[in-house]
Image (cartoon, rainbow, N blue to C red; front, side, top):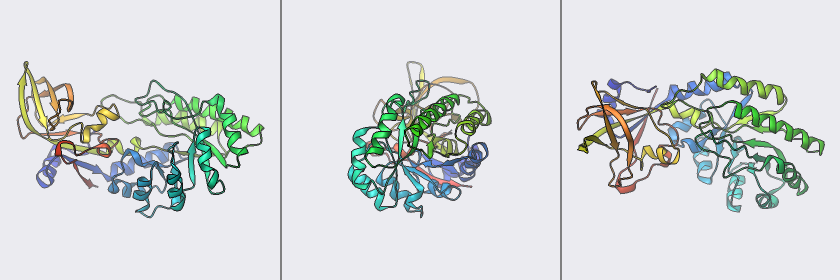
Length: 369
């Protein structure tokens, strides 16, 4: 569902021009409240990588003080709002020595690891760091399988955690990520149950863990429907209460918080008919806000103020590259140059990966209540 209507979009277009990203403060606040209602036992660490726009971070920080960061730059942008380093979790499993030192200098002392070679990097700082071991749970059914690149095999995790302890490192808990835009809540349930098994096996070895991080991947609705959020979260809530009622639980939602809080306003800047198919050229594309089509494998709802019979068409971005196609097989009413379009659910993994390729400047962002 779009954040704004066509009338409001036309007013914003006249005032600010296009391409224009419109952020709804209320939509972000509503999603944070939904999280608190459905998973009250889970502390949210917003995943800055999903959208690091300072205005969006300011909105989130007003009702949530914890952040998941993955780089020095993300530490700096969050710190600018007065967030303490102790309220940040460094979730990148692979870090340089200077990354660890920079984080510690800024008060960040919670880190993630998933292999023995990473443990060596923490030895000079072993009295200052708290570690979460990332477990791999491959999920071919999600949009992006985030256990392909990172995560320790559950079978080998016991040995790895004990190795860390024997090195004098402070292993505090486990973390996992079932994959981005995961539509199946029982992937979390299975991972939670397996983490409980690992907790128990390590306890038998004298290593008592205190924290479980259930990661991100919580879905939003794009062009496909998702199950009602209460139905999605209920099995996760029940599994956490069943297995981890006395454990600190955290998570790293990003897309869930911001994706459907942002609309993109576009203008048709050109048109042509090729092989009996209409091509419409708009002022943003895959090198800009639609970068999520490439990196996030995502399609976004496209709305037109035009009415009438829909015809097959192709929508293309403004650059000179033929790769810059935003909608390959769309159906739209006949459009004219100067027409306005709205694209909804553009808040996650879009503007953050936009470029200045071909000299086209990324879309401007404004915030509304």
